[in-house]
Length: 476
Image (cartoon, rainbow, N blue to C red; front, side):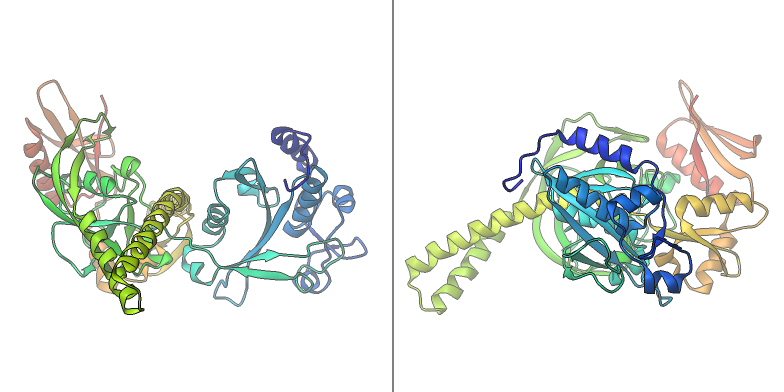
């Protein structure tokens, strides 16, 4: 800790801090100790409380509590860092949050108390992981482009948090590099509905058009049906991604996402071709998901050729700068080696960042048949609203998806939606599958079939006849 000896263990330090902070509620005070409740007074007269005043008042805003946490950590030999994050909410307001991080034993930690949903200690491998996690949980996806992060240099008692703080704006990446795999040569990826067994059976979302992206090639291949040895695929990297068009599906929307961590991109994106791969053989693995087994594949790629081409380009540029052939070749090898090391380090960091995107609080909206927005919130809040108003028909969609829908799209959705309470259930017996069309718990009709293809055909037929979207497997 830069010359400071930490006498207590981290666990003991945090445990003691928890006890001090447990009764602290949210509130803002002026320099005379009066609590402020009017917004104008808060902006003009708010003052950062001393640690003693915070414990006495048992209230403080995120700045007061951050100041207290910093003082406590310093007194225990830990050097903290303070950050301020804000975004434009498009209504003339700039919601903000201040928080504290610190390094300990090659890890980065964020301790939070004022932000109820994130209260406690959070561990990360890198500073950018921590900042990304805070950003994805604090800033709504539709305002992500306006979100800014600052390092606070002079936090202290008696300052006005709105006018007196000196800050330095930080720039850091929030999006990892994703891969897209196709058996076609493409310049652009266009959102579509996948044509596969899971979609046909209604196990995977069949309404939202998307471009599926993956952290690595293995994950991408696991999502493709009917792969065979000697098949060839092109590996691409999207070159233009917007935060607001990224969507993390749950396991009901993309059943294999529990393994392959699939992310959907809801807009068009140009592609950069990285390499071409050829499937060799299936890898013997024992990975199950709800509807079968995950398949993994050995493959060969022309990556070495890609690297050789990059090396040749470097040599040519170095020769043009006046270097001899041998000198240019050695310099190009050195540069390319450093590039490959950097790419590997980036991939490792981006693998960790992918986990952070999974936790994003994506905003959804509830829309009625007229296209009117009735409610906005997190997905589970929108679903609760839909259940509370079960006498009406609604569509729950991500905000960014709604912005791309036309009036005709909305009409088609409600025209095709299932009658209330009508759904399809199927279950397995020893020698067959039984499919039932049910209204609530009452079976309207049923059908028996004897293999998966027949099951798929029967379910598709029933969905068309009864206009049913909901298909569930019943466990017996």
